Amino acid sequence: MSLDSLDKLFLEELKDVYNAEKQIVRALPRMAKAAESRELQQAFTQHLRETQGHVQRLEQIFQGLDLTARGKKCKGMEGLLEEGKEILEQEGEGAVIDAALISAAQRVEHYEMAAYGCLRTYAQLLGYSDAEKLLQQTLNEEEAADQKLTQIGAGGVNQAAVAAGGEEELE
Image 1 (tube, rainbow, N blue to C red):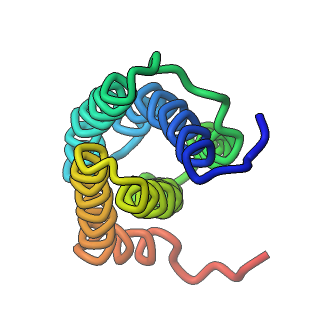
Image 2 (cartoon, rainbow, N blue to C red):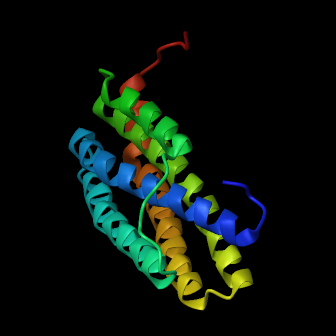
């Protein structure tokens, strides 16, 4: 497809984030299961429910544009989730694994915030007010998820990770 209009760019980005959200829906249960912190497990489980809602909102947007909801492979999200998967395969201290999961999850959230911020702006410029509202709602939830992860890290996970490491030197 030739990107010769904002409408086409909007559609391409919409397909990309739709696929990204579907990838996240598959990844979050594994992340929740791997987390040691009960609070982090709950945050991942809550965000799974929100992410399922994000998929539904995107489907609403596609429907509102008289288009079939389908994605195109989001390679950026695939890479971020692959890095997260590497964490799940590591052995180590639970608190350190949790800190790594928070870091990986925040990279995902920041990617999504960038995508939804751009899409919301494109929807506004194109006069897609219903889509704009739905995209803003999702953007708000992504920002809240990022803040929650920051709070969990600051609220004890990162300190537990420091304590778990003792006095080891960096390799």
